[in-house]
Length: 113
Length: 119
Image (cartoon, rainbow over all chains, first blue to last red; front, side, top):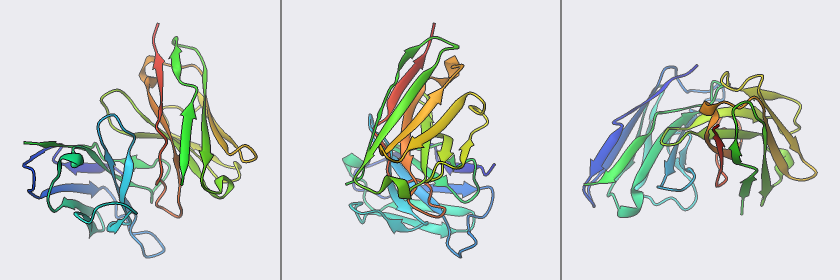
């Protein structure tokens, strides 16, 4: 199975400051069609997950542009340019290239300092 | 807009059975593969099962293989998860999720339904 490793697991951030979450996969997520399939999800407290980013860097509709994704191969990053209070929650990366199983990172809990 | 609404969760004793349902709307259900993903209390996300658009092929995580069965009824825009021989460690919120395409695998999620396995 492809292992997804996130860091840090806990991320205290001051409002208005940037935040960065790393995700590393145990195999390259470059698919045979030439695209790289790595998604990021946000789970706010008490809510179901919501996809923010797909194929490394594409923002879903309605996702603020302070969220951005980057990376290639096995190393990926989710960045928030200026953290707002509504960004509190747990962030997960996910791969769907090598399945089954579809695999998620352990999650990174973002909190306000 | 895409909506996924799970139902059927509840309290069940170890060894018991439960059937979850997921009602889909806002998209052409029969065009999409679908997944069940669960989250144990205070834990991360675990994919457990996947079904193709026609229902002709199904896939399972090792943790549920042989005990859970995924199915769908495209005439009713519904996804199901039959859970047998339930264990305490199956306690979780169960989400249905849509596969948008290719290797993206998951985009929209339902609100989840809680399954508690306890004596």
